[in-house]
Image 1: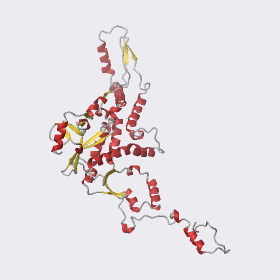
Image 2: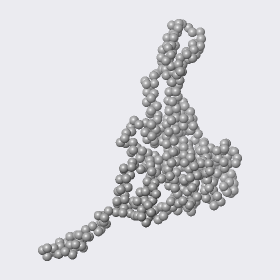
Image 3: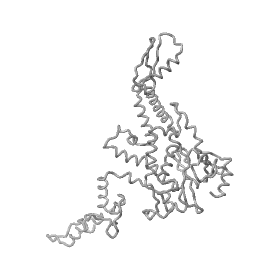
Image 4: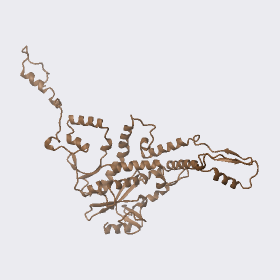
Length: 434
């Protein structure tokens, strides 16, 4: 970062006008209504949250990412630009493109923001990208109304920072992908916004674990006809002999007229399993994941599961893809490059149907002249046919013609041939110049 920029940031940092730091919204996390503490890491201990985050992170990370140049009404892929290699292969020497995008996408789904440090050369061209932990980043506005980033470094996750403590970064040195938020600058954490739903999921799991820890038997009361001198000792001895799943099924022997009376509610009466299932649907709803993708197949069938998968691409994945594309273009391309280049994550492979449907679609496109053999082979990840062998030809059926030429051939024949009775053709006949 330029020395002038550093001095400018350090001079304005003492009196920021406003702060959008993620730590400012820490009150959103904490104890939920169910009594369970919810934060980024406890939420990931639930299978539903982990599954949703993994599905979306891996989906975005697995999409082919390319750099394109505008070419008239079309586009052409650019291989010789340095940014192509960084996005497609290795954003830094320690990570592949898949791992980098998977990491940032998981940050985006849990914290609501994804940050990466941009390493540039003297000309402003990008040399590398390194992830930044969202819970250590603050977005601050200085006295002049300009934004800058503060990174609170306390560990060695980033090799580019030489000192611990607060590191100040200019906007051009940070790739920031914000999620849904109220100010357009910093996104809100989905986990924080739905902490009660996540907390109830944690409470259900803890209840189920405790139920089986106690031998899958509900609580109860030991009644004694007399007065017990040491009730704690009786309770402890009961738990030692009959408590825990390893003691399940043991026969209890009661002495001195004691009786056992159950007071707990059985899980089936409390609809424990239904509650757990509903919480899975709640988390899937939070991330807009089709239930069948997290293991709930009750409402899925052979007739609708493919349609649900296509809806996942269009309504769930595509908004994240657009968010990624526009953030990458905004942060990584130089001002003079933004009118010439653009970044695209290709989701066409996820929208492909089964083999028969694809072949039928290719056949229609080939016969109607808007697909060539090489266009089809490219979509099927096959090598092209040489141009001299007709691989780039666009063909059309011979019985098709332009609308303005319809009936032209018939009119020409009528002009050349006199009717048998010697009369002229009737006005309005095709080809008579009306």
